[in-house]
Length: 457
Image (cartoon, rainbow, N blue to C red):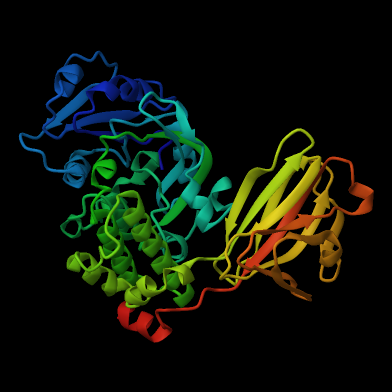
């Protein structure tokens, strides 16, 4: 690969005139400069074109316009066909980024030639550019630590273990694509308005690998006029989610427990939509198209509506209290696979720590707790097996719990209750770090392995 490959920057725009100064400023500020810029205007009526035509730019801007609005993914297709670069960055007009965005992603893709796309973490900002959250919260529901460090992995494995659950690439602006990989997308299969990017990533990862940078180099703007925000009050987002998951199940081999989890995630989104959009509780009956689409991926959808309370997953809430603060939420771990342990490392603190198994339907296992001095990799004390009984005590309501060689197994009853962490005597009253290793039982399957195989076939 040449040292300075050409990067084609596509800027799709529809009525985002007010954000264009920041978008172009972030492009001009890039430390990597071997780029071409294509501005794709989808029949804007807010003066966007006048602004870009009058823009003084050290790089020539190729302007491509539509007389009629054609939609996001048709703009993608046009820009991809016109791009001349070895790599493509789809820099959405209402987003922004750090000056080192291209440099760091290019370094990642040079290290991994099999990657079809690499992406960075996305910091969520509001209309005025103020940060809403550093890391999208829903990613920690899938895995509490996976998106806190850089990684590189085989594309089909990423799809089969993570991308089928939700769109784990929060924002297309955060991605750097190999242009050849983007051109493999079948846009004839992209009638989707909201989830087409999710489908595109899955198509790319059939033949290519994926890399991730944990640094939040991309700034994803949320505001009232985004396509997603304007469509959340209908059933379109849920219907498209099931369509993407069905497409993934058709093309990848998905383990039964992951298929079950994917069904639960989307069902939960459906229920959330009903509550937040004030939709009637029998919305499934008045939307036969949505129900039919759901059944194509989740044959157990009717049973989920019959007993929605049984669809929760094991959750462990970690809270802590210092000497000067009340109890504060620290981090949440959503457990879903019994073949995967997850380690949560608590920051140094002096005070109390408690664990709350929020779900009454799932059992959480604490396999091990290790106590460290701050910034040390050597544990001062490790509790496992029977030792966990001396480091954990129950407070509040009732727990169903037992200890064996596998760890401390706990399930909460109806009333609120907590596990109190009791550090060993030699660490009491001093600042320490704590690592908790957790595991969960797989959720019971509503879609049997045989049904899952039929779906795949």
